[in-house]
Length: 372
View 1: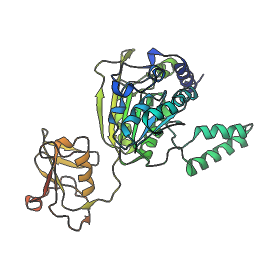
View 2: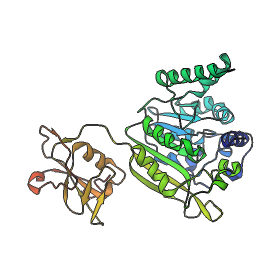
View 3: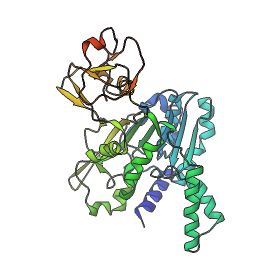
View 4: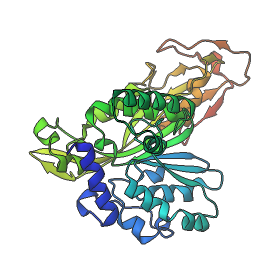
């Protein structure tokens, strides 16, 4: 049996009866759990709580949504204007999540949650539609296989399951490690594709402190148990950076390993990051001051910020920094009067003189400005 088939079987069993070894202890918001049916809570498996990053009005995509617990928690946070989409490959888990959809819609005061069948490493492919196509077009030879590939290519282009730049926040709870190593690069790229410019990710997963040897990777029980498919700590972060995200950060870190196998520590982490906005760099005279405590810091786009210095930034970078996850470390100075800007991004380390910034509007002087 392949690793993928073992994962499907094991989580199908998890939809029937609780599997204690598939989950880490997590302190979820009890108020958000009150509305949920007991079966959804009991048959959910994860290692973190990405729901705490959901904001009002968000379009949220939950990768590997399982029983639907995090989706129904997020639905209470996005409000009437928000939307939550759960994507999962397992029919038994999808059936469990959909079982309570009408009941939850009544409790929430609106039907703002939907569940779709798909692979998280290929979010454009509608697997439910693929199943229907295969039922009507059984494959008996190579020509049939080519016809399937051609149909899938058209479907992904014309009717993608998740469209590009349509999601404010991608969340996931202990699922990325289940994806085959050969597909992980595509997985990170797909997450980047579907996030809106300025959108975010909050991914809870299991990482390891040393490389996992092939002997453990070949163990289907360890793989489906969220162990042997784990990436190393730095690889996990770098995967999001390589895909194009910035401000990648380990926001939650399990102090104690969840499992130790052959001396390798496997622990739960939650990583957050942001997708840069795609606007043209326009210079209007904005500046930021890095508060410290370090002499200087660098961001993922090659900028350097010297402690206590007024650094020249374009309007796009300024907007990102003053709203970013490290905004408390920076002071933003907006121009006193917004004149006509010019297409320009300051070379790294360019200072903005005091004469240029006098009378500017300070942002974050007390509670924080910005950093990327």
